[in-house]
Image 1 (cartoon, rainbow, N blue to C red):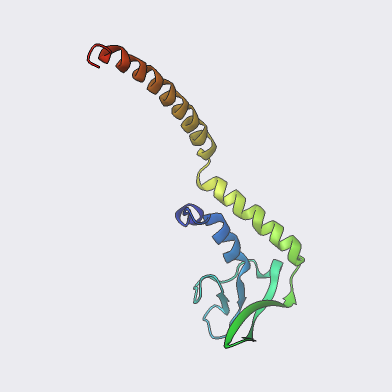
Image 2: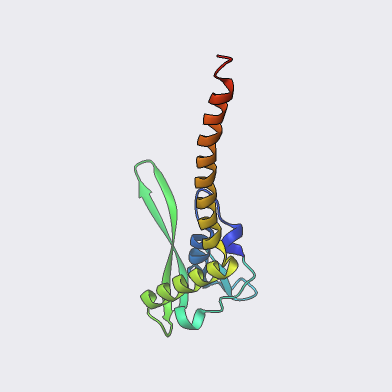
Length: 139
């Protein structure tokens, strides 16, 4: 349901969920021992940590002409049972499945919407021709 609720014209809720599931890192200051870069101070533990491994948040200072900024980067501290590429593919498959299960009738709804638009377009043509026929004596 989070994939549907976070959908907006700017982006997809599935993209947010995919990034969220990849953004966990070890944080000893949190009660669960985990934190997330997408949703800081999250109370959810990282349930897929054995597959992904333990990530660590590295903070780097980037200096440029007239500015200095901090850049956060996730680095794999302890590898999991999957490689990073395998884990990313598995999370993508999981998120796609969850998005489908949130609304399995989505494809049918879009198909019906296309047919409804075509029907309304055809009816508009007939209504316009009928209007011209009724109003031809007035103009």
